[in-house]
Image 1 (cartoon, helix red, strand yellow):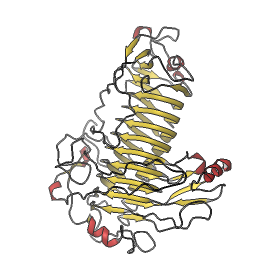
Image 2 (image 1 turned 45 degrees about the horizontal axis):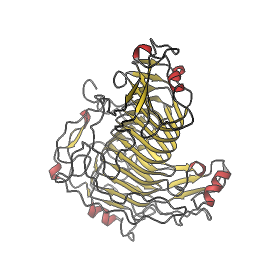
Image 3 (image 1 turned 60 degrees about the vertical axis):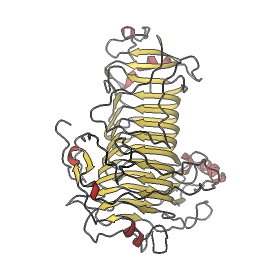
Image 4 (image 1 turned 120 degrees about the horizontal axis):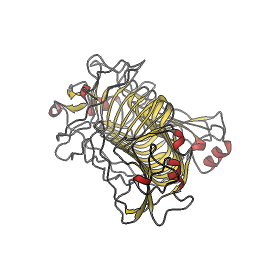
Length: 534
């Protein structure tokens, strides 16, 4: 059957976080909108289908997703119609869908949609989804579970994950791994269950991670690295992770990066309006980032291992493909040309503004509030600036921090960064421009998922956020990101104008969504359970 494509969101599950309005500077453009172009429907029913059937209606459904995928034209952009694969409720074994979902090329007018037909999470896939070289694909409303990695996308363009549950059962290396891809959207989903990262981006540009629950990972809950750029991380609940909550940058093998993003680990990453809680390590981090904005996030019970937030070097290695490393180095990229060498990657223009950090009585970061590393000298000839600084135009202001005793160490100076001579970040400036253990914020009911501030009017007002300076001239040249840092709405989608407060919530009203029970962890004491029934 051929129908006009009409994009509508499936009803979010009751455990999904509150919806938020799109940031005007970074709209969510990766999901298909309304179009007058037709599309072809292919039905799949694992219990009653037949791969020899027509597939055009529920009554003539195919049995396997593999058979449906094989009916999508291969190797060329769709020109006459999009394709919509409708999955009837039921359980789909790993043998029911392709080992590799590859070489299918939807367009903006004619996308490829793979959807649960009978409501969110009604189609349950067991195993690992592996996509390669696909365009304009939407995966919507399904549940995918595996005792290992759950989803991988390489060389994907305009790929959207919407209203999906993915669970690696704490056995995934990454629950979601996306690399060398562009125009990626993850929205309205529940991503969990990794012994490393719930979300791992390497060399991903133009991406949105919005309105998700990202949790239950032993390393960082999520990071974007390897030259990832123009990424918005907004209105997510990020929790129950080991090394930390979210970091922009980390360390990458040079050969895995894509030109021209060959210098910093992360460019133009905006982490705003998120709720980050119950992470053993830092709630937020920057490891080799350029033009990074952390603003209006609420962090609760974070950093017991050491510190609340870290601004440290990224790393760059050559992991065996010397020819690939040499090619990137010859283009002007920062990194070694052979295995065994490694380079520290600096930070530049990291802005940390108007966040709320609350560690309740009996819970604190072990050593200090911040970790900011001092400069390092990279090996000669790697194109990395020398010395490599982490605090070049680092700005930390407008934050309200309640953590540990009144004399808890800042964590800057001495052998670290933010020395007295640094005009944008030093101990005196940090104490003057942030409210550190001067006023205690009272959250309404974090155990039940309500992270609003009961005494918000008593907290200092947010500070204006400066724009980023002019984009640097790099070799090879990198397309300019947005320089404006204004955040116009809060976690709940309410306007901040006239109702602005530090943290994820302004003073507008919205009903919170309960957090599910947290995972019992070896290194993190069991957190108070969520609301009954969640």
